[in-house]
Length: 353
Ligand code: NAP
Image 1 (cartoon, rainbow, N blue to C red):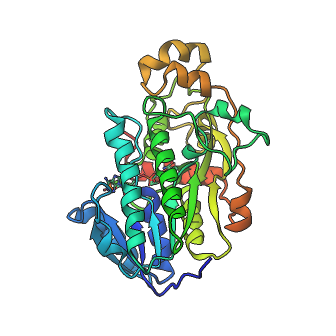
Image 2 (image 1 turned 180 degrees about the horizontal axis):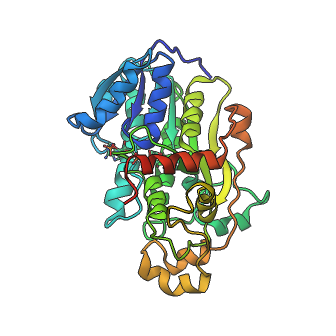
Image 3 (image 1 turned 135 degrees about the vertical axis):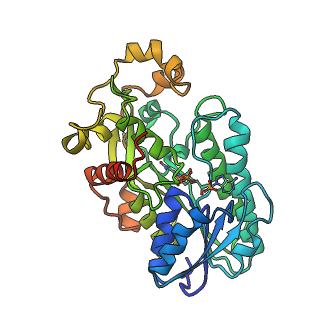
């Protein structure tokens, strides 16, 4: 694997995203020049947060307008870059048309960015933000695992447009990335597969990521009567940024990396908040019985379908993060720190609505 020249610009797609902003901060703090692609460069308020990061760091930032759906959109931003981070991809669960809102931008965006990498001679390495959603579809998939843990060898083969459309978008995008990578021999591909990302945002006022929506619901009483018994991996957003940074800079890296700090659950997330915030906020303290969820779930939330309940509720979800510890030297933050700093930020910015 070729060494990356840190004096060359580095491109980050979707730079105003929750995960991407922490990565941009790390790159700027290292004195690097960041070519940040954004959908709407006229949104000065959103961009000013990144400009402020650059003012406080040794690096510099330059903005480029780019849309995942537009071919050649990334041409100008990629010029002269050895390293490309492709983080942009829609992450929301409440969609009307999953093909148009999730799959098209995820898949076509990956094609557009990587085909541009093929046309840009300077590019040596692409780091793609995938997800554990491309590793497994439902917690029940763990029963097929020989090791009892999800590993980088696993692929989600069960999600579809009608069952886990966001997950499906991530499978298609990552598979396409490996296909385009295999057809050339100039640049390397490293893939980061984070679990559920939590922790404070650089720009809490504008964050749209699904990660924040869940914690807001925990704090505003939506789940006061209980949480579904849903196990999942959890990782701090700052750890995800470190993993991306190292995947771009280290030489001994290859393939996919599960980046997940803790085998947790929705209830565990709330439990980490209760010692500090439990007296002042209606945080959930118990689980909704599965039978009740079976009857009421589909009416309460369309993502809580009977199929989802059957394949996920009450089932274990264990991630093997060994490869990230070995190659990316990850030391994961304690979960209480992640959850409490995130919740405190929501309180400080009066965002617990
Ligand atoms: P986010 O804050 O919503 O970031 C998504 C980014 O994608 C935003 O910058 C958004 O741009 C950009 N984007 C969406 N559609 C676009 C389009 N058509 N053209 C150009 N840009 C577009 O969510 P996030 O949590 O940071 O997610 C970042 C990445 O991490 C995604 O690939 C996601 O799948 C992955 N991931 C997230 C989690 C998690 O728990 N958060 C877990 C695993 C993987 P705007 O700023 O203009 O909206």
